[in-house]
Length: 453
Image (tube, rainbow, N blue to C red):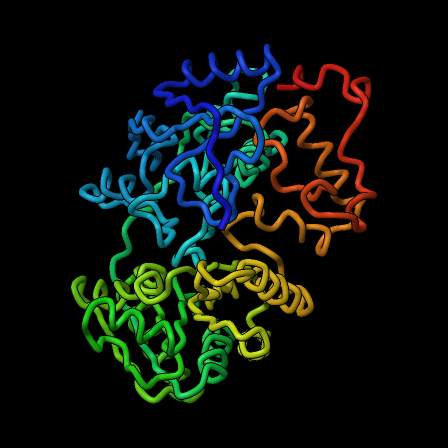
């Protein structure tokens, strides 16, 4: 919905380029915003005020591959899917796989702590980042973490991942590689109600089965995907389809697939289809990976929400979303990471309708409120950015936010890096309890902050 044009953009190609530019910004008091491929969904890379845009899309070199230690080091502009492509011939892959993996960059994944289909079993980006070369907001270059998964020091690497460009710019990233599993099976179960699909998710995970991915699409999304590809790959009359992928050793996968099939049928699945070879598995996943594109073909605009709820609350929250959709007179399509309760309701609208954006944002906020009321979170993998900063104090107290700001200021005492993002401020969010948050401090509150790095 939001569109901004930066006054100036710099296309960096090396760490030295980034360091020189940031040093100049620090010297002359110029704020800066880092941007990768621009696929983010929370407005984190928008330049909302006079600031320099530092683009990393030309930093696309793979710097080192260390297969004996199962690591790869890349520049931030390397596309997510390129990492697996670089090592797949040797039997390795990179687990985090956002739906935009053929275009999103690793630097952006680090900034947003992106997830994906396989985050249920293998975790999100932070679980696969070992080390970071970082240009800090004063232009100095430092290293956080290294080549090992654990270090006996403060986890500044973990602090940086997911910081949405507010602590500096990553210019080299060391990632953990995984060995390709011996066998993979994908199940497609279709249901006559969304509640039954939610029960199946709950029952499979409660039984101790740990799928590598569990995804749900509702009827609206099913038909949108089928129309996009001109097929009937997913049953058009199903209220929901559930995709379950299990991987590992052959015997383990076989047993897990059989148990998951039984549990889905017991929960009310009408049928369960199984795919074991690469071609059939890819066919089943193709629609899920193309879900957002499919909606773009049938609606002039859509707004993607991103929230997390406990798995046990999925049926309740999905019912609430349907109710809110009707009361706000806006259609909502659902596709989400069911295994970890990460919802992605897509609110469909026509941008040409006067006043529509406020109605869409109001519905999005109402959905977030429902998710928080059952113990959820306002974001699972898309970040806070500009889009959700006004809701952060729904989750955190003023003291919580002030503590977070202390950490941010330790990296960026002058508030130069991605200013105005993540934290709620009266300027962006209006008067509310957030005005009590102390987001500004006196210079002598932080003597020699940058010396610790």
